[in-house]
Length: 329
Image 1 (tube, rainbow, N blue to C red):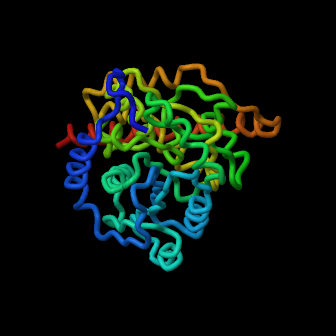
Image 2: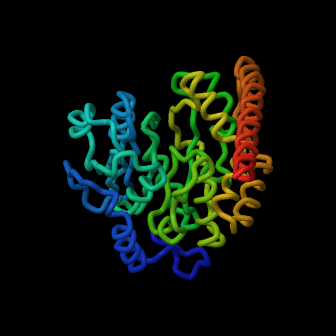
Image 3: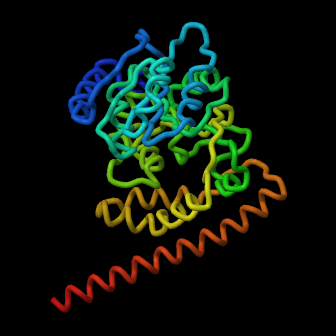
């Protein structure tokens, strides 16, 4: 796994990783209420980390799928859960499935939770997985060869629908087709990253969501010029883009004006915003869709555009109202 130190994109060496691990643990320790260890995995190659907040029974399914993945000879894998609150009723069964469970500050946001897990993960590689996704069984076997190339800093896998074919047809970025291509980590719930590279890049930005995977990709490439972030078509997860009409509406409206929100939060973010726009405008391959999936996607896109327009209009009205009240005072 260790690259040639002469390469311009050489990853952090062992000493740097150890130093950064100590720094990250000191920084994120206040978010950890407890760490329950059920099995000690000695020097795992890979940590599979599932972030859970108010999860239902689907979390058990996600952990079972991770646990069931065959591991190639000579490698070890640890399966951990970040308990961000609201999963107490699942803990008895989780305790039998997980190697470690991290109980974090209740209600911690997803990106600080991810950073906390990276601070305490033992694997050289760390997977960040959705609590409602199910990895397909060759997942671990398919992940590892991609990192034989030292230029690979991180990868994102392919996502196929679990229960909701038409909602998931809306997410064309879930499936880039059958060939490995350079991409960004635009599916944050099915990614794998080198832990040392994550530390040097600065990790996930804590203050926004809806573009944090792209931010991490940007930060990784900036930290390691010449490195690669890949789309890996053989690293497959079953996951639905939306589960209900209510979820579709909330998510559609929350992403409206995302670029403006990032710019407001990070005044010096021009370089990242340029990277993000370039990513969105780049012609990327996509998997094939059935006729009914294409028709569903057209209809859902039109509805989403209308919802985003309403959300932007609502924010404009609120801003004008605030300015008006300020002037009256």
